[in-house]
Image (cartoon, rainbow, N blue to C red):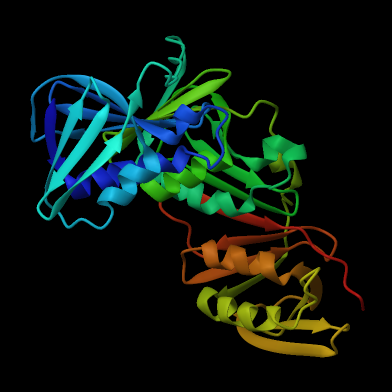
Length: 374
């Protein structure tokens, strides 16, 4: 059987689907894409046995239905450098050979039968469903992802918690040292619930989803979930466990508040971090008389630096220690011109918020303090 497809469109779909694949699989068949041709569409499935990425592409012309598995690296390398053009693929079910023909040449790949390829288990028909825009989902993921933990011992903290309330949703991420809480009131689910989105899934969505992708549907039960867009479906297992009470660590009363230019702060943090102790990243932040003074030093190498930034601050002087790298991450993630640092005392967490919150949203980032040497 023969079928013709756009070379660039095919490579784009293969590249997106390949992000769920891993380098070492327990099943050799998972080193392949599943090609399912029927009804003038090519369905592509990639998996690592726990995650499944399903997408499809229109076929220009086809002669018959067929299902087979194609080695992922071989097919991607074969068409990666092709300019946009019609690509004709000829599949022989007897010999399992797949021949590709394009304007400047041909290639031949040996495929495998489709039967051993595992397929995703369907979500429970009584699962919970949440619909939101791609822009809302991506904003929540982008703001929280950097704050998630890498420690597999605290598995629940390696993901992003999507806390569903009746009239809003909350994206939360924390590793115990920094925390992000993003309240979004553009979504009004009408029910309460929640689940922990694994970090790997968040990373894939951030890489393949565009903010203008339209509506996104999330269906989830107690164990697994599926995210559906107009272009693809992503099946995965949820992280089991109870997410920590992220609201409990956020100080309610923070009388010391300083507003500073975010780009100026980012530049100063990049410079000061070079002179901070490389293991701790400890940096001193001192606020007094509309001035934010950042001090970093590394006694092991006898280096130090100081940065002075103008800010809006008219309260009593206060000094607090923070990780320069963590504060730089927070300041970089923020997408506003000015940010406000809120403090209660040197022993309590610092709160960083945009000076102007996005419409119908509330973005809050928290950073745990560090003990100063002086």
